[in-house]
Amino acid sequence: MTVVALINPNTAQATTDMMATIARRTLRPEDGYEVLGVTVTEGPSMLVTEDVLRAAGPQVLDAARRTLAGPEGARVEAFVVSAFGDPGVEELRALTDLPVVGIAEAAMAEAAADGRRFGIATTTPGLAAAIEARVEHLGHSARYTGIRLTPGDPLHLASTPEEMRERLAEAVEACVTEDGAEAVIIGGGPLGEAAQALRDRFPVPVIGPIPAACEEVRRALGRS
Image 1 (cartoon, one colour):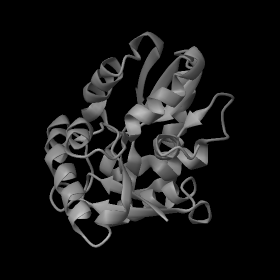
Image 2 (cartoon, one colour; image 1 turned 90 degrees about the vertical axis):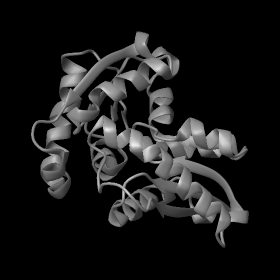
Image 3 (cartoon, rainbow, N blue to C red; image 1 turned 30 degrees about the vertical axis):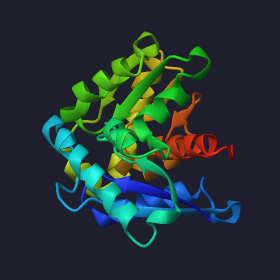
Image 4 (tube, one colour; image 1 turned 180 degrees about the vertical axis):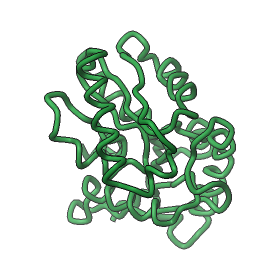
């Protein structure tokens, strides 16, 4: 089996389990993959500000080191960093020769394919500037139509999945009808189930960053 370690940069084990379940729909056991969910040991249960996003980078590196040193370490062949700001991705690449995929970079690459214009819908206003900086860093500014944010407290929305899904649907609609987006990313690993639910509700692709990252892992391992 090809083992892929999915690192959750927040401390919510339930979020790790949910994201790993989504990853297994692309990296399927029947195709020879095993997804290992890894949760960082320190930090908040959800990354909602730039300060905590930056602080998650060292925690991602620590989680990767623990994983490589653990009983499954010799079998790990790739890492997915499953927070939308890609904390620690570049640093982890400097630490290991294994493929390292951030969910934001993978989702943006998919959204911008064939020159499409894309927007981002998310629940975390405190990360808007960091997300837009990531767009620029990855060279997608010319195709980026902007970010649409749900109203209300991100932690409240995270605790009410149906409400979160509908608020995100409104944000996706605004990306498409008001901003002219030809694809929309649901910007967050913990928003993965909402991204799955919204995938077929719009006339443009609605991109879940976890499946996008898993497809990139398949390509990196020569298994696409």
